[in-house]
View 1 (tube, helix red, strand yellow):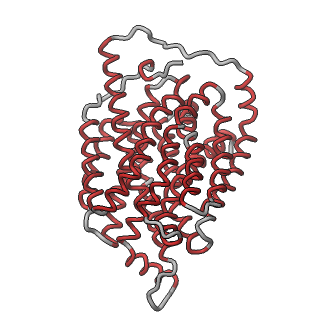
View 2 (tube, one colour):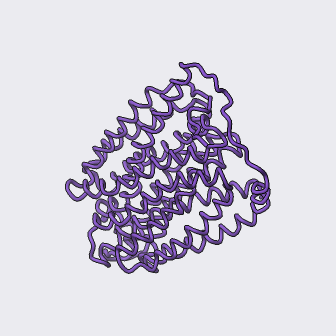
Length: 420
């Protein structure tokens, strides 16, 4: 493997770990802690909320430091910092302690998206496919959070679901530092010049178009984040409620048991969630290829329609049918992920790109954090059926907003550039 391919692989592993760490607690809360600590699922979600706010709020300063200091250096801090924070979280003995640990995880997790995506979009061409491939790794992190944590709950305890990825992340950080240390030193020695807008003179029409597209990007970012958080975070709990029969049957079949039982059910629920996440992640590769060929408007509209259809079908379904429909709306939820990043990558100033991605992810992850009490509120009062109706309406908002996109993106950079 060439150094360039290893570099891209490590960035992808970083995206995998970023999402895995942020969603380990979702499965821990759904399948273990509410029993072990006697705390309701909705109450447990409240302790995860500060971690997701940190995930969003610290994205902008992380991007600013990366642009001003060193992007690869920030990635090293990400790998080691989030690994240490995860290991510390495993020692929690109360909801408050685990909330503090999740906040620390969120702080370090905030580094990846503004910094990692800035590296990916600036270093390589074929932006759509690169972002899509990177996104698939992130989705696999979402999927493996449910799979690994479910397995650990049955075989090693939920604490190991924080410890093992933490140790692995620290090891990857050391490898990343060894690979990029020469590049880090060279960049630190070189003087950085301020980014200067290349086209100070811009027609009013073109500026208006850039502002319009930027507004659509950030609106759809916010609404898409509600959909992404509601589906990825709540899916293990939804499967726990609606697929006990299927999970028990499959567990008995796999284990060769003659009589029904609950042994291995948590593992099987985690495996079903993993299967849905993993298969749905393929949608990003399809979307990435379509973005490079057809642009974001048509692709985004198709993805929004897919979500509307499958969210509308989901209420009342259980077991196998629910599994199939869940796969359908997760295809849409994951398929939408690379689109806004693609548009920002095409329009953003290179010297300020990490900060611009930081702004995008402050919006995204702040909404993710706010979605947690929203999920808990809707679940406690009306159940998941009402949540699916709300998410279908959210997808409709995205469809209407995307219809206002131009057929071709404006390519000038200054409007989206963040001031020095």
